[in-house]
Length: 313
Image (cartoon, rainbow, N blue to C red; front, side):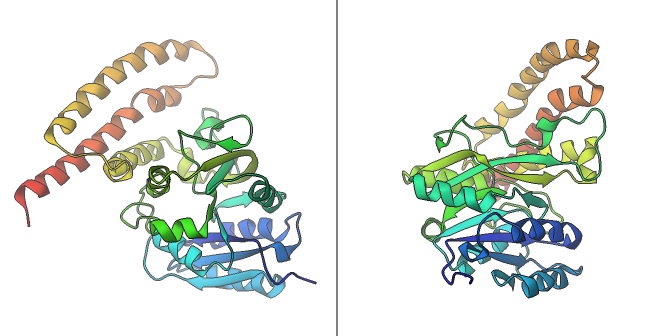
């Protein structure tokens, strides 16, 4: 008989990915623990495909699955709706284009029972559903190891796509900032990092468990070089909000010179690798030019903010 008091809530926020979402939910429906140990809360963020049908089909076969909607567009709004609807002390986030390992919930329960964390995360590994070009490296789609064993990390951040957080922490901090983060088809980042920065400011413990893992889809658009430029530029745009940096003309003027120096250092470091059989022009571009693209995003965003502050309302 299914337990009536689940220990964790798995929140899956989704937007127009019904086909992939079905594979994500299937991975959560076949976990190694009793389904009564956890609930799955799917948050539909204004999808126009058959997302609702997919969700309700899983609800028919899985009593621990729930479906809700968040009309405000944006991943942060959806994530916040998810934790507000959660019925447990712990909220775990899984991306809608990810597949959880069979022991995902089992591992989360183990960490909760044996460690004193306020938040913790794990790794994600590339899921090459659509193949990959010869130049594409696993490291482009892998969460790096923050430490060898399970424990607290004092630097670095866990990924929001494989993250568990105490619900009370999210309530205290007001959840994820809706000013940054993916919204519809708009690329944006930083809301997960900002949340963890605020946690550290309050002395909360962030942990990492290398045995907690999911597979994350490397979609077709991520297999093209232009994605790396778009992603780098978006990261630069959100950099000021993510790290709560002080915006001033002095800080803005440092951006390009600093990154031009990096570019020449990167050229010296990476250009010789072009002679290697497993290092391609695409890798060189990613290693040397994409950081410059990020700095352009920082520059554009910083100039707009300083200009708007100077002009005033």
